[in-house]
Length: 172
Length: 223
Image (tube, rainbow over all chains, first blue to last red; front, side, top):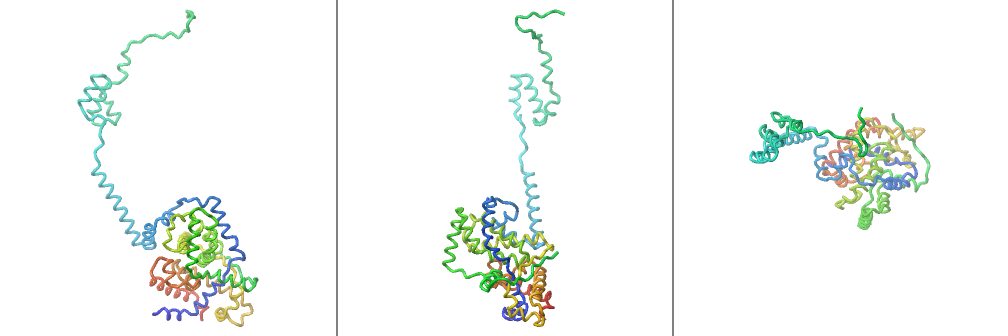
C-alpha cells in the first residue's frame, strides 16, 4: 500500500488530529520561558554533573546505541544480561586459577638463621612463622614459640625512688 | 483525575495565527544563514555565553514544547521537561560536535527525557490540556466533524479535544511520537527518521499502525 493510499484511508483521522494544532499554551508563556531556563542555569543547575544512568547513556553515543538496541526487547536484554553474567563468572574463574600464591613474609630459611643469631627472641619467632608456613596469621606465628614476656620477667629489677631532691623520706 | 482547561476566545487574529504556529510547532526550513547563525551562537554558548544560549532557547522553545506537550497531554509536565532538556543541553554543550544541527541534538535530549518520564509514570497519566485557540471553531475540517446543529460549537470541540487526547495517551510512546511529528506537527518521514534515529520504513510502519489504533479508539467521532 502506497503512502498516498494510506493518507486517503486516514483522511478523517488526519482532519481530527488537526485539532491538536489549535491547542495553545497560556498567553505570554514563551516570554518567560528562556528567562526561567537561564535563571536555573545561573542558579547552579548548569554545572556539569552526571546524575544518573540516563545522563551517562546520553553522554556516550556508543552506550546510547547499545541501550537503544536492547531497550524494550526482553529477549535481547535477557541475552545481553546473561552474556554479561557469563563473562563475569568466567573472569572470576580464570583469575582464581591463575593468581599466584600469596608470598609469606619469611621465605628464606638461611635469613632466619641469621636473624636468630642476632636476637634470640625475634629469631625464634620468625623461625616459628616459617615453620608454620603462614607468617600472616598471628596464631600460627605464636604457636609453639616462647612468649616475649618470658625474657622480660627474667631481667633484674631495681626499686625506684620517687622522693624529690632535698627532701628526706619520713619513716612511718 | 483529569483536569481540562476549556476554550478561550480572546486575542486578536494575528496573535492567534502566531499561537497556532506555536502550538503546531511546525519547523521552519533551515537556511544556510540560519545554520551559520546557529553555529555562531552554539560556539559562543560553548564558551559559557549565557546570552547566546538564551537566543538558542528562544529559537526552539516553541517547537520543543509543542512536541512534549502533545506527547504528555499535560502543560505543566511539558513545561518542566522542556526546561530540563534545555538545561541538560547546556550542561552537555561541550560534547556537541556539530554532526547534526543544534535543534536535532537538543530535540533528541528532550524526547529521550520525555520517553523516560512517560515510562516512569506508566499509566498514571493526568491530562492538563491547553486552551483551543479561536481559529479552531472556524477550521472547516473541524467544523465538518462536529454537528452544525450543535448550539455550542466550542463545547463540542472541547469534548472532541478531550477524547482525542485520551486516545493519543493510549498509544505507545513511539507511536504517539510519530503521529505527533507527522500528523500534528507536519514533519516529513525523512525528518522524523533523522530525529528518531531509525529508517524511513520504520517511521511509515509505526505511523500506519498508530493511525489504525487511533481510528479504532475514535471510531464514534469519525463516522
